Structure formats: C-alpha cells, structure tokens
Image 1 (tube, helix red, strand yellow):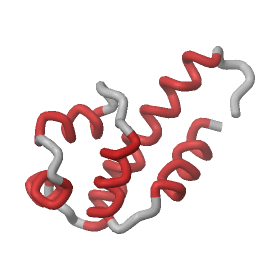
Image 2 (image 1 turned 90 degrees about the vertical axis):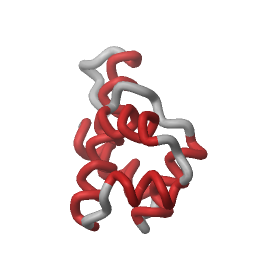
Image 3 (image 1 turned 180 degrees about the vertical axis):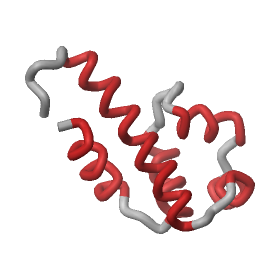
Length: 85
C-alpha cells in the first residue's frame, strides 16, 4: 500500500485499478460488452459504469463479472493492488 496517499485517495485509486483490471481481462478474453451483459445478468449501463470506474462495484456484481470472464476476483484484486503500489 502506498503510504503517501490518504486512505480515501487509496480507496479511489484501488477502485480505479480494479476497473482497469476488469477491462484488461475482458479485452484479453475477447468478451464483448453484450456478452458480459447477457451472461452476467447485470444492466449494460451498470457494467459500463463499473468498468469505467465511475461507480463502485458491489461484491455480488464483481463475482458475476469475474465468473463470465473466468477469472478469480482474488487475482483481479492482486493485480489491482500491485498496480497501485
């Protein structure tokens, strides 16, 4: 964790990093937004906000998105944490 960043700022940075990791994973897997919406059951507008980082991702939505992307939420968090450090 970066100690030169206030805790609120760190939370925001981490949330942005999670969103970036989800976008990257979607690109790696070649999953379209339409596929992600259909297979996750999450509204397109919500997924777009989650992936842009303009809305916090609820745990249940994160799990659903990761399931569609066939990636562990733990791996997404680890990658996000490493990118913020």
